[in-house]
Image (cartoon, rainbow, N blue to C red):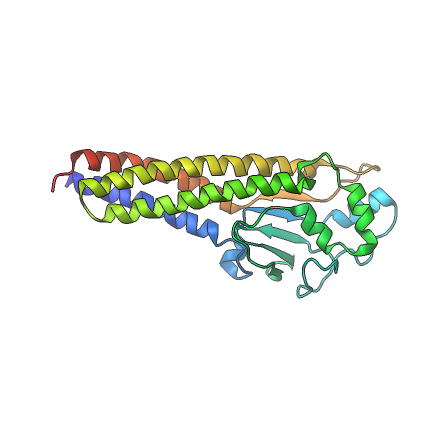
Amino acid sequence: MRGEVCIGSASALSFISLLLLIFAHVGQINTDTVPSQVSLVTVNMTGYARGLQGATGDPTPGLFTNDSRTALGQEAGLRNIYSWGFYKYCAYTEKPLGQCANQTFGFPFQPFDVILGDTPELYQIQTRYVLPQASAFVDSVYLADYTRAGFWLVFLGTLAAGIAFLSGLYKSTMTFMISTVFSMFGAGCLLIGASILTAVLNKAKSINNYTVADGTPLGIIVSTGSALSLIWAAFVLLFISMGPYLISCSTYRK
């Protein structure tokens, strides 16, 4: 009975870990209720019109668009909210009204490029001038490289969690050994991947405290989303599952 409890707890932990990772992966794949609520990182632009006006002294008519159907990346107007997932980003005039970019495996976090893509031509020069070039927020190469690295590690961790769970369903010493190895590998990948993403996204948050010449906040706020919390929780559960899997591997007798 104790052996069954040990095996069952390991399977439950790895399954819940896998489930959390699946939820993290579906974030921002479309604007439906569940995916739209899960994101890796969100950029709130609602205060930027005031910030740009404070920097230039001029009003900013046409800087934002109120039409959620307006094409992305066509310099047709900024949206209030931009949210990134692992496979695409979505832009919202107000949730749930928005649309998503084309899907890319391991979509890079490049907020500066996305903002410029939506900024009307009239405000392109001002935007390039106002946003602090020393901030990691505008370093698209740095952000893209490290968020891609974080994605691949999380992706490998997800695959490993799935293998650990499926292998542990068949009761034998060998399958429990496989589950132990893959839970260890997966937990390691998730730990490193989540750490990279956390560090990089925290650096991007440096834009939050930036003020323009007259002391007005720039009005761009970066915040990490629930997907990052899901990844950390999945790591903890998969790490804990290593113990029961290892015990089952060492003590199971058919």
